[in-house]
Image 1 (cartoon, rainbow, N blue to C red):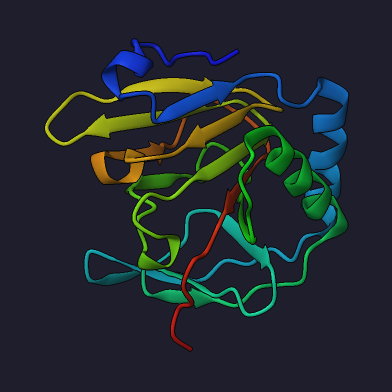
Image 2 (image 1 turned 30 degrees about the horizontal axis):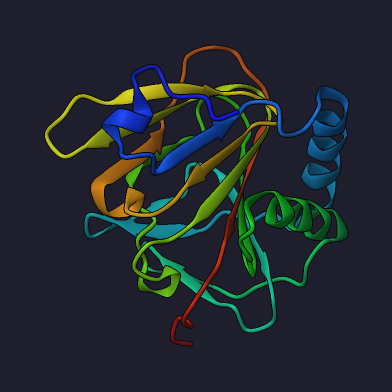
Length: 201
């Protein structure tokens, strides 16, 4: 079943977003969160935002097929070979969506101070209409969407939930995961992607 955001998303956004709150069960989500937190090769580096260098406000890890590079905000990521757990969940999401993914950007939000600013996943390596499958694990966080000049709408992403962004979503809308003052723990987000062209070395 496709669940809309707070507003009538299928009508508002032309059906380019789908949300499945219980793609994974509670126990499986908890076990996967713990495994990925302890076993992935997390890093934090400088990125360029609006012409200035800042530290990423979260940890990241880029996994994928050999030579699948990805560039954003002034950095280029070289893939780490697939972790078995990432490969397993990739295959399950592929079977569910009927789409193929060759990479995943994992984001770790250690507490409410870690965040993701407003942006589009519209890098040229992803093609003109990227299909991105986003799996959430751990603490619930608020996911925001906005169209140029319009008020943002939001959805609380639950642990084990799957959010699909497809078709013209990245052209029309920005999204963000804002900071929160609530005392919360770890959240890991896996964003599976199909890189269609390689970033320069």
